[in-house]
Image (tube, rainbow, N blue to C red; front, top):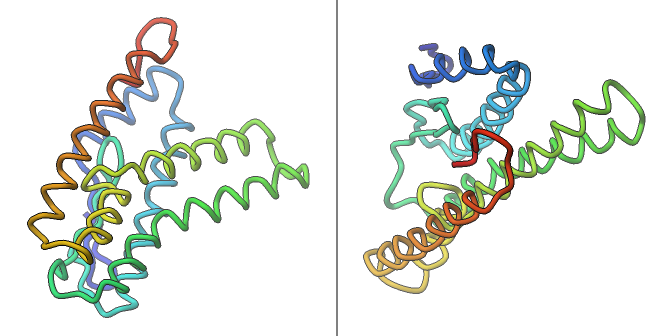
Length: 184
């Protein structure tokens, strides 16, 4: 755990296991790159939240993603919540543009920049799925909360999230893969 500017930064214990497994499978650089992308994404949320004066309790890197935990969950103006939610995906967008510029200019290793751009794209798309607590689910809840009661919006989001989750699982079964299917 690291504490910086009033916010704790934590690494989930299973993160260490994922790193060890990535060493054994020869995917350490790719795994480290993914976690760096997730960390930058989460820092987008943190900086936006702190810009509005929100108290960010902690940021945690999880084995398959990350999360920023804030104290301000109710009573925040919708425009602030919108900015904080979008700040994470915007980090992925600028990293995609930056990697495309690096590829276009021929700077660095083209294979790595292609991987970096593709990883950002997949993380961005996955994160925008309408499943809580992903950013897409939070955007859907924010949009529905402006039109319906919070309880009704939350129930609708839960139902949409279940359907979207089932679709993701179904697609994971369909994805072609030789050997162990890590998508599952």
